[in-house]
Length: 455
Image (cartoon, rainbow, N blue to C red):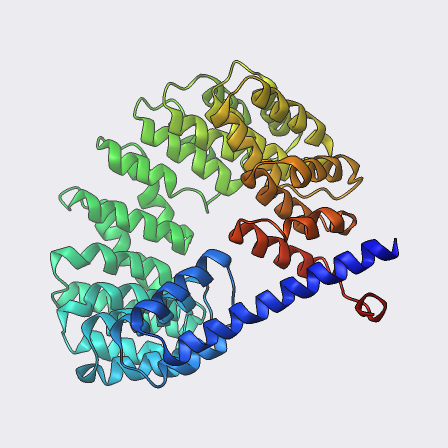
């Protein structure tokens, strides 16, 4: 036992030293690297979902005007909704004559993604300047940045309505502007949106955008216009109207959604499934079951299955289990249903998942096996972890690189610290990526180096 502890100590010490060397090297890249090296580093951090260099990257953009570096950092922070760059981003917008256009775009996009309320007047000023090259990005960002504050949302919506009505956003930007009004969530935009939706002479893409915007706002004052469009002749507007019903309730809404499952246009059936999903509409379960089992369009089946998963009542879960265990179903159907089943009732169905996974491997059903492998890698068991620990051990000891990778996910997601020996053994793997992942997993599980082990 003591010998094993020394081995674990040695391995973990090596991993942590290796990790420290990597971190030190990366910090040097941030300090002295070229734009190509820094952008490459950012991509590595994205792939690893790592945030430990955020402070260094935030400090870097205060001292550089390099377009690629600024774009990379703004994008890296923005995709995660990570605050901390607002001051630099606002400066890039205000002093845009000193910045590359792409930098301004990246800064505005970032301010929208982090919903920076301080940026709202700055973005409005940018739009007021009539610099059309920034219109699309600025409209989108204004909707997002104002959405968490009612007063700002009302101000932004009124500005956007006025801009659409009395100024020239350009045909290419009108859809983005309409979408931004919906993103604010403000009732100030509803009258204009209902007018666009109801205008049969208006361009179809704009009517569809307005329907989506009314759905985002979700106020009953826009419902009548949506319901009228449910029975319109144009199939694209009709499907968009059905999809817009998700946030609403009432007998008329229920009837419209159920009727939409009978529509010959497949996008309308997809929209009906999505609306049922958004509302967790239990009455739709028989319709969703029929579509999941028998619709001729795979995308309709997909959305019906996802809706059943979102509803998640006893009837819906029973349908999902049957779809998953029926081996005559397509790989695609079985993988998506497995995902839903494992989200809703993982403890109840985990043994079934293992059986189907092993069966797929035995029959060389590679696509099915890989899909189920991904599902099992994301599964979290709340109760008895014996079964998941056993299969995780199998993956870690004798699996392929992909199986080992998912095994590490399973260990981390289910706190399987009893697999410390298997995890630390993978640290020695020649594959650098899997070795680093094993080190991160060991750290996450709290496998510590004690004073006794250091001796």
